[in-house]
Length: 71
Image 1 (cartoon, rainbow, N blue to C red):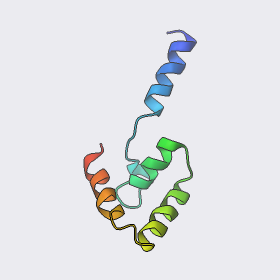
Image 2 (image 1 turned 60 degrees about the vertical axis):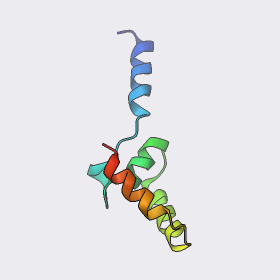
Image 3 (image 1 turned 180 degrees about the vertical axis):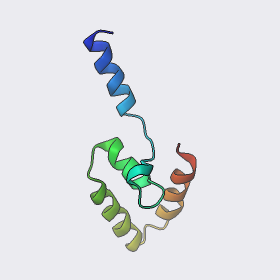
Image 4 (image 1 turned 90 degrees about the horizontal axis):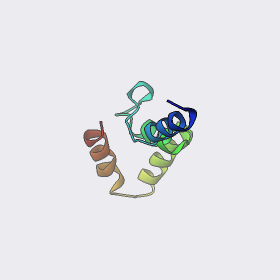
């Protein structure tokens, strides 16, 4: 496999969404989102908590659905 194909294969596998159960606090959704977008997992967790406290009501069912459906 040449370098271009190897790099393309790494890019394709790095861009798939997976729950990160090894770095999970609850179901691994926040850590999976952070890995997918390349963000800090603590910022994602803080964002979820703040959005939930501010009344984004559909966030909890969406979070649970992602946790149950993904992987």
